Image (tube, rainbow, N blue to C red; front, side, top):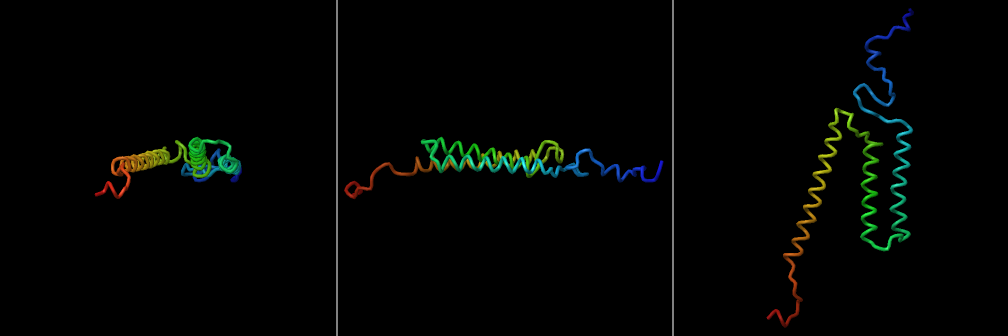
Length: 135
């Protein structure tokens, strides 16, 4: 056995079967995963652009909901392919932090919309501003 065949414990600790994973367990992705994320991002951007510019769906509420769904899908693509968030990295804490953030954002947005709707409904007068009725 030559000296080149011998693997030291330090070298064994840095040898990984997956070249995209470092010693601390973080995935840094591969060229293929980055290209996949890029292609998905372009597709998830082009389709809503086409829906709006081509006026494909006549109902604006449905168009808005479809665009929002594409936006959520694009957020997930970015989290998975570019931020490398999964249940395995850092013991699952990055995914737990993302889920917590999503919950807080949903609560804040839905609460704000709820408050604004009820303020508009309960605080705005339902009468007209006719000078004859104000006296």
